[in-house]
Length: 307
Image: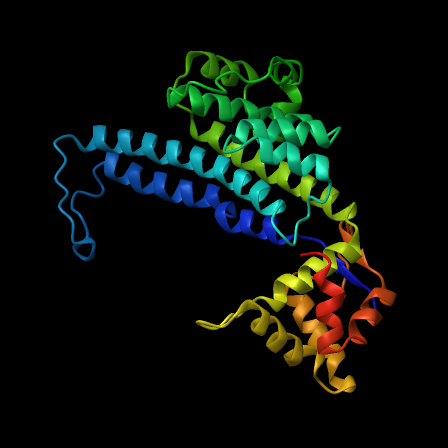
């Protein structure tokens, strides 16, 4: 039996933050349009809030601006969450140089993206350019003193690929995008939606690359070790938790142990079925057999080296 990992846990966390964001933004904008057109004049009773705007049209426009600003921040934060989780064990960023580069960026998503660019050559340049520009745009709007300028080569990518930009990002106009960035005007729905689209593209590509390049045995040890530390009871020492969890899986009868190990790995995203166009990590049958043959004591020794 072979196992496959097509999507990492960091990518799942990213999708939980940003999954259907465009739909939710549109839903909110539809509601604000109803306020602006006078279709909605009173606050629903179950909100239990006072709402009596002097100018409903003005309030709706300002609320629209707030929603787009918040969506912009949420999209950038989701990329940041992915990169933070990617270096936490079980880490999908295994390169020591890449990890140091990300760590040295501190809290700056701009510098983390530069680390990604340095360590992952030939990424899809349009999504990356959009994200760099929107991070700098957000910083300018927030009057940040750092990372206010998108790298010139990314601005050049957007200028020189205007047609492809429009084709891939639903008519996004390069001149309007770059002009808005230079003028630091409020972002439009199309620009925020394009950032969300670009973020999905970048994370999907980066995730596939990182999974495909994994040292699978090292990663599997990290996964097992992390999973053995799950479900720690109040006041229970972590060593006792790991022993208890090890017994619950590897203490089973050999005939049942394989299914228990498989359930544990399923919970971590592994599957026996590969997608049609699979791009990710492959766990060979021999490594799965090694896992099945462990005992509660030996599995702790086998996985411990990754701690």
